[in-house]
Length: 92
Image (cartoon, rainbow, N blue to C red):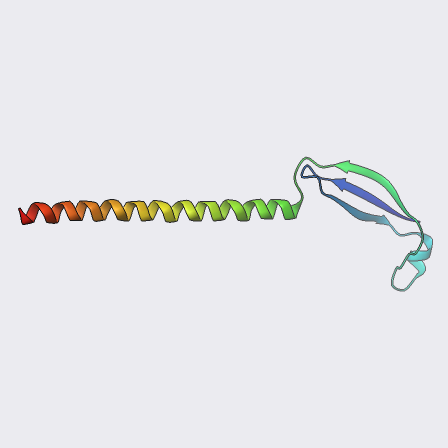
């Protein structure tokens, strides 16, 4: 019976990690164990799992890029409006 630890993250995901091989798996050339896997400990983590952190960072980066694009578009519109007003004043 190989021993495992379970890590439970705040996002609701969990990961099982091998703590130690059993006698049969240690002696098997590929460390295969077809016996019962024993859960030794459950560890609550105070953070989300790595894939959830990466997904959140990707979403935040997209939001920042979108906000920048909207800001630059708004500034270009403002500059164009100032140019148009200046051209109207010159024509008068």
